[in-house]
Image (cartoon, rainbow, N blue to C red; front, side, top):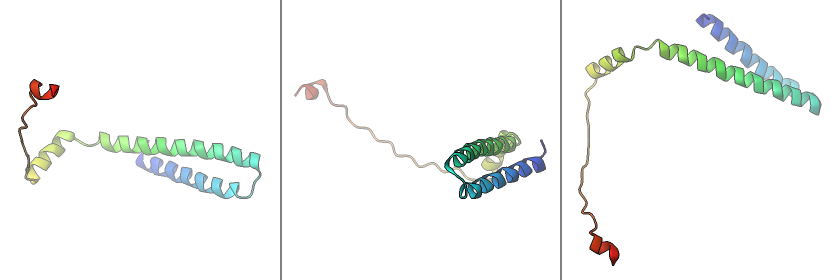
Length: 95
């Protein structure tokens, strides 16, 4: 699937969701139930399409190259606090 195809499908899905909402405003209860089912299906399809687009984009990222770039372009600063707390002795626990 090309990138253009993906954008076209997302646009079609969004148009379907909007037209579903407009249609629901002027119909009876049974028709509204059917439209709501169609809207749920459109939502699922939209989420699926967005997930696939994100997966395709993430698959193109070379993680090793990005880590090297970050380590080369940025300084790493670590702030830490370490403390020791004395454990309660068994004698303290029984009292």
